[in-house]
Image (cartoon, rainbow, N blue to C red):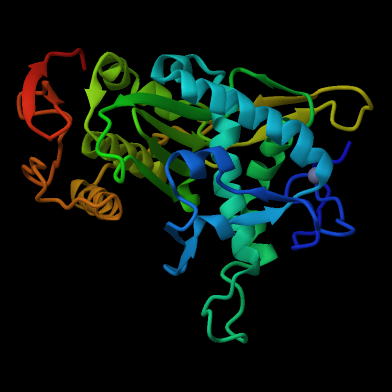
Length: 335
Ligand SMILES: [Zn+2]
């Protein structure tokens, strides 16, 4: 079973299984076609790592017919049907599916960037990322193999998954995607559903944010509040000072699932797993995410001593907002 082999990362190899493609006639849309259709994104542009923009319709990556028609389309169908059914069904989705779906998009974007020039008008500028750089996300590629091969994740999936109910805004402002590949976090806002996934934290972020996330479960958030949660999660993931390690078994045996055991994150060190939270640095990250999402730090964000929040007020109560960003109530929660 191929799992760790150093596969060729080129435009002639399937992005998922690595198979050399004879005619390159099948491609995978990084963002699924149903999503492009639902939010009318074909000609909308996404900003890449080097800040250039590319239309969503051009975000395709090489993929063999087997991966494309079997494993990937089945995963896609499960997500699409759940989305069509609404937030409640999305919330009940298998977390592993949500993890794989979001990470396929993030890895797919990186894979696409292998063949996009850093400066479009300059053919000698090199590509946005190189195959060697893409290998930094090697473990993510291994986990994505669970889309096409049987995997058993012992002690839960190696990620944190958050699914929120959001206020729907008007039709041309109901979608936003953002990711931070360096911290393996990504988010998507699709109408009344917001998803955040952080990979390779082994659920540490789910633990840290458990109380707040639980308190927000029964509330529809304004997008600006959802972006704030993403900013907090992303920054904390950035502060994680351990490199997660995994033990794999079974991958060399035929007809045997790959078994994955996450090693204890703390290890032998007494040092806390997260470095100290710097409110000034966090405020910059929050502002950057807001800007990308079409808001700014003055858009009703309460900033006190740089502890910017739209989610929690100065008395530590959760802020309830309507779709127009008006504060319509407060809710106590256990922190
Ligand atoms: Zn393939």
